[in-house]
Length: 295
Image (cartoon, rainbow, N blue to C red):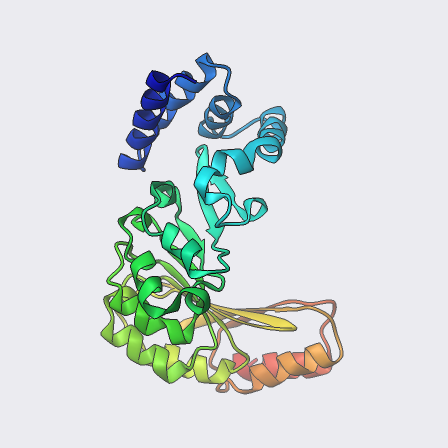
């Protein structure tokens, strides 16, 4: 590719990053790449056409398998290519995978981050330290991020201090304490736009008590507590009571007993409905469900 073509490509990609919600610059870029026989143009065009046909979906998968690492460019060494989710021709979901601070520093200025809307932090905080992590999370390139997961509870003060350019709708925490999260939700602007909170915790009762204390105007509508071997999802309508719990159990025996113990920590008749996704319903589970629903 000539120097002039390189400049044209850079300008076209910059136009995409400057108008993230507009498909127009992406379509222009797709046409330009297709005219030059670049398969990325076909991939962008196919992803912009919704819904894709079965043949188009197979074509997209083949192109992604063959070229994703190349298309990621400077991001390829910082996020596992096979874990990247692509939307409208660009990375939309990724997990950070850095092994040393020098790699984390490269994240601060990368415009390629601009199309990400969901990000898993991986070991970023552990590898980079608080100050460098704050700089990464403050990057204007992350302005489109709405979902953040793999966030250690110890990193929450750094996240709050970063005053990030994004407004989160979904947050996934690791090793979180309900009391600390409650204080953070009340004091931080980051908590105001949340509609979904995920935690790796078996303390379902403590989290349910926290949820019950949230003000009616809080926007949180989905709460997920995950621990092997079960996952509990609580939902509510806007500003209403938490009414429905979906309980998924992976296995039986000890798995079901652990899930029943988690349900037993909830107040009696505190839920309208419990939906069970499990191999079968044991007497222990049935009794726990009857207690929390008042059935």
